[in-house]
Image (cartoon, rainbow, N blue to C red; front, side, top):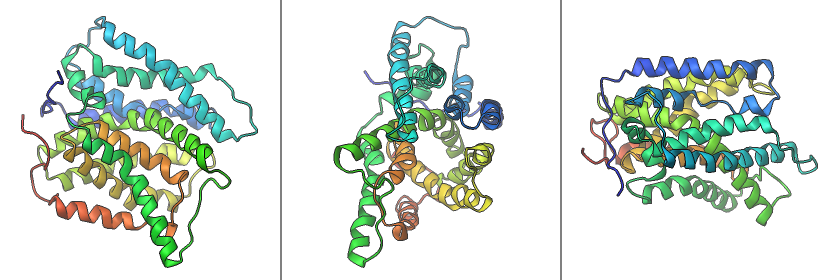
Length: 322
């Protein structure tokens, strides 16, 4: 029987979460700054999820749990295969596939986070259970498919209006394009969305929505989320310009935050919804065709959901009372 998603404990501090998430993440990123081209370190960003798990746990004494250990044992090699394939795809078709054993470290972190859904600890189950067993699947599918549908819409409108349509991976089509898209999606799901969303949306957002409107809570999540990225943005291979960082972490990330809040609330607080949308947002725009001139329509999408759900008012549409 599926467990009811419990309301967060308001006494668990937002400030404690932010301090711990920033400290863990930025400590993990020190090797990134020192060794920018090492794929092991480039896949370490699990601070938000680990901080949320620590603060949510009701009992920090280790307890043997066969279900969690089994899930962990199954997930580690699967996560490792995904990250190995993604590193190989990024290196190019001519590069040999290298089964880097060091990539087992980020794979183990991702597997440990997901396997927390099967923990005997009630606090961890409350945080992570809806990552694998959401109260409903409809909005999870919407979270997964809405961005590809949006990109397809820009292609259709672009052709109709005579605007340029760009293929981010020219020369790929059919099965080859589907394979690259799948690898990129699952890599972003397991090594970005799973690392971040249990913290930002699973822990922080519901606590803020107990005190503020969904729109204000979204802004209060967006601000630390944007700042949290900065060390990695400056340190990543090739680096980003200040103008690119301001644009991406400013209005673009705010719009993404609005859409993720909308999906999270509409899915009755299912963590799987923001995880799927975050993975789609980080992967599909870089592999699927789109009309760049029409991508700002995502702002119209965000405004529409704010108005439709009256997100400036207190109360969370779609979330069950507990």
